[in-house]
Length: 221
Image (cartoon, rainbow, N blue to C red; front, top):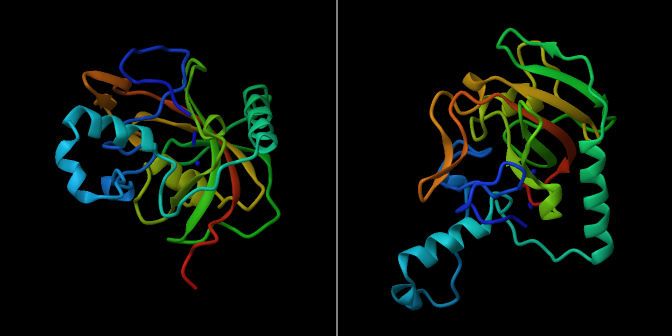
């Protein structure tokens, strides 16, 4: 839940941007992100610090555990169409858990439930409370792979997708809207900061449109 991104050096409220992998968007642990790749480790000494950071950012939050095959133009067009469909989806009446998380299902899935501690693939569109989109896996034309139930994502996504405290787990094929209050997101401090530019302000309420695509095929059997 990838998605390509515009530069984070110039803030633009209406632009989609990759969040700096040093912060937990949506991951809570930097160890979840892949390191910059080089075919010859000896060449690393010739790369400037700024270039290395740029490479790290461009890898994006969608890289988790496997290489991604290039999509055909047809598939890329399909994901773009699906992105705009999420933008135009009608609102649904939110239910609220005791934690303060708001959730409602646009489509109830009919497949397997989200498994504990295993990798799954999700598509998502993320917005601020005013509706401004700040990230989307659809724009990267591939779903995001994440692991749920073990604290690897922000609390609002863990509860909102995996379930708990009265929130039912999502099923494959399901589409759900989440309203995540600050204490279940990134809290009072700005997040996604890189070179002095922070993508998410402190105390931000976040809105997510989630689609549970499926269980990641690379999970160990």
